[in-house]
Length: 131
Ligand code: NI
Image 1: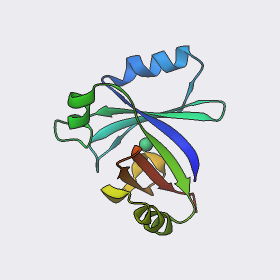
Image 2: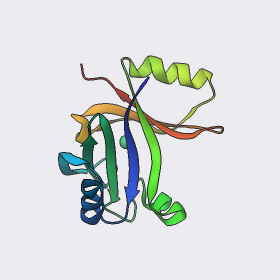
Image 3: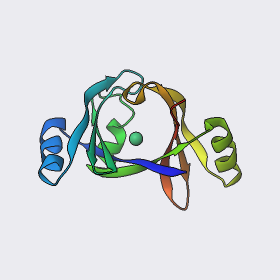
Image 4: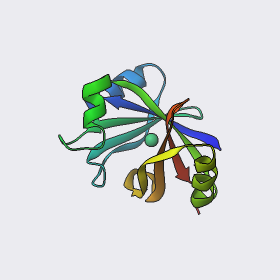
């Protein structure tokens, strides 16, 4: 599994995008709305390092509770895999549990992603490779 991005929860998208730009990142993909998760997402790149900024767009978004509980900051690392189902099966044998079942990610060309949690390392996201 190779790292695709680090996901940051932010309160307001624009000032956080500007902050990343001021430390060497540039926008890879302008902010788009993800209706499955009710969040806005912007990807930025610095060389090969990629961050994903996530802003809650609704009180019942997938990140609204987390934002209230933990505030802003990095909260997941996303790994890219060739075969998502196989990766999920493998992670389950290592006692990862699914927190958000596989669903299309509009911000990632509708590739499927899944969120999984492990008691020893916390939350990860797993993304299927471009076909
Ligand atoms: Ni992510």
